[in-house]
Length: 120
Image (cartoon, rainbow, N blue to C red; front, side, top):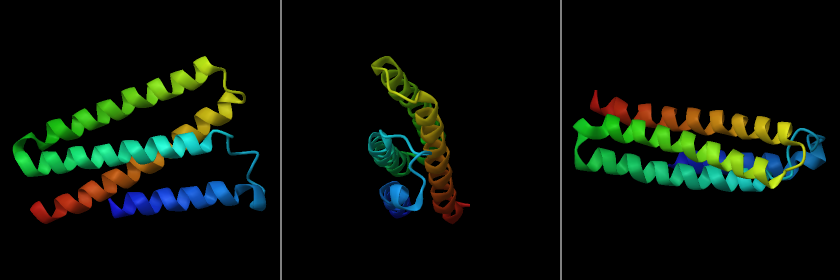
């Protein structure tokens, strides 16, 4: 979980410093909503994975696949809400959203495999 918090802080710093380093045209105005969404989603995913580890390790895969499905569905609902709301510059929003999706998913998979290495 510490790595996910560190990733959130680094991405937050990049978002904060983007206007000063000339990246504001590539980052959408709703960047803080996206970051809060992924921080919250990662926290709940971490709680779900801890429960999968604690209760019964033979059901861990079901917990993991459930979290992946929930992440995908919640992400589609999040994007759908912003499309319905009529967010300007929707292509920048979607590209920023999926870059964050890949970053957070990659870091969570890395953290999960790092924790599973102790059990193999």
